[in-house]
Length: 358
Figure 1: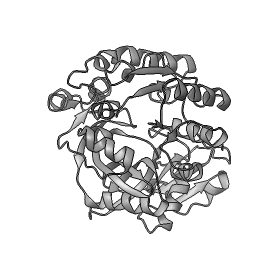
Figure 2: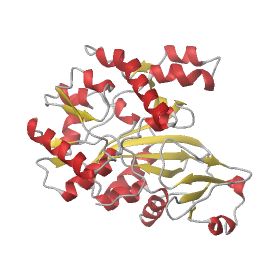
Figure 3: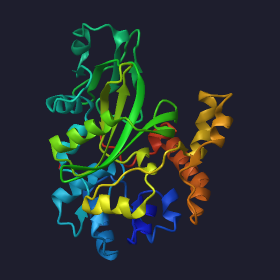
Figure 4: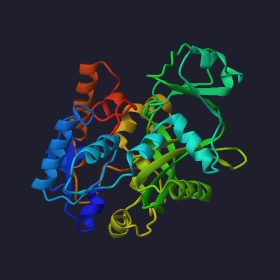
């Protein structure tokens, strides 16, 4: 995103709580601001953001992941000297909540699987659908953490503080979508299918997908909710070709890599002009692919890697590619320090689990 905005002639300042993020060394980054953890004390985070906005004369803030929740909270509590590219808090939280999203989408007439909210053992006992026809996952989660797919038994302990959902299992091919919306209008939509994953979580290699039903779903959701900002979805394409949305991620995802026209993308994001993805071949984060790929496809991974273009590589901007090892080591240090997995470590400082409101 920084590279596209920079090529379109915009001044890009980047901010994060990490010491060695990949993007901070990009030629597209004119300055890097190190912030406190977004999910720490809100006053300290908001003060650091406000200072950065004034020092660097920033007029628009574009979240990329779950820091969006903390930024929206900061904007609600203080006068910020910049616009925020994000929807209002309640809508954002409803999209992130795996039960509330299904209810919201269903109210708009969109295709979603039958889903039950679980806040105690009695809710599990009340299920009449066989366990092996269900998927269990926490209401607040990311990267498929703790997900149980068609289990023979469950030992989860949902509560009001840690609610779960049981969702009817939908067979078919997974398809994802990344979109830009501007005041309730769909500006851009890139659909893609994961080829390789980081364990069971985020896609690390992905191929473009051109199903018009995906774009139609996203458009109807955007128009029905009045969405403004980025948002992403996970779908299942059933064997009959119908699309079913299983969850929403109100943030950027890998679909952004399928846009390379800087002026078109910048116009879409900044002023709501329509733009389209323009890459028609598979892409990958090759370092992540080298770590996780051999476990998923030991015989075919190296053949596949040769035909995938690395999203970190960019003409005339080699430093982010070289920074990957250092950034990965920093993530590993976070994982070790907090005794969590490497994937969980990537959002340790920004994750929002429904525990804070504006």
